[in-house]
Amino acid sequence: MLRRYLIAGLLVWLPLGVTLLVFKLLVGLVEELIDLVPMQYHPETLLGIEIPYFNVLLTVIAMFVVTVATGLIVTNFFGRKLVKLWESILGRIPVVRSIYQSAKQIAETVFSSTGKSFRKVLLIEYPRKGLYTLAFQTGNSAGEVQAKAGEEVTTVFIPTTPNPTSGFIILVPTKDVIELDMDVDEALKMVISLGMVEPQWPRVPESLESTENKPDTVA
Image (tube, rainbow, N blue to C red):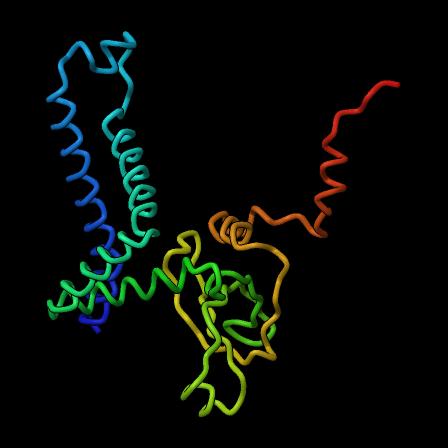
């Protein structure tokens, strides 16, 4: 039992710790680069005011620019060749290969524009019949699971509140799944706010909403 709790705790804190450590290293690197710039060119010298958390802000901007630049590079022919070379090198390292391939598969599944993961908000009866909870569709279970279940099932992710990054998956008979009109962002706001922020219902058509928001004109 203690081992189970220990592993569960590590699964929560280890990714967070690694993320904070990497971010701290990046902020430290930015600070060292700023120190190389002459003092007369520092923002507080040029603007005459001190910008709070300037190093953190600059780090976030740099990460965004690097990510976009990387995307621009890898979407062309030469960039794809570099990515294949990089992946072939990582594929020869036993432990790194498993971690990289798993992370890549998860990222491709979540962010794919053609995939169905986190594209639909569902309503299912859980934890017992008569009680309902929000869930996100993460896939259509096929193969062995569906064959042995004897019916079509859908894989859904049930988030915890107020932290939707944790949760668990369950396989629900597709006939028992109710698809909602609310989008993923609205559902996440509802989960994070403990249900206090609810999406508008019924939905107002965009054309009507734009008309209502248009200021009245005096004839």
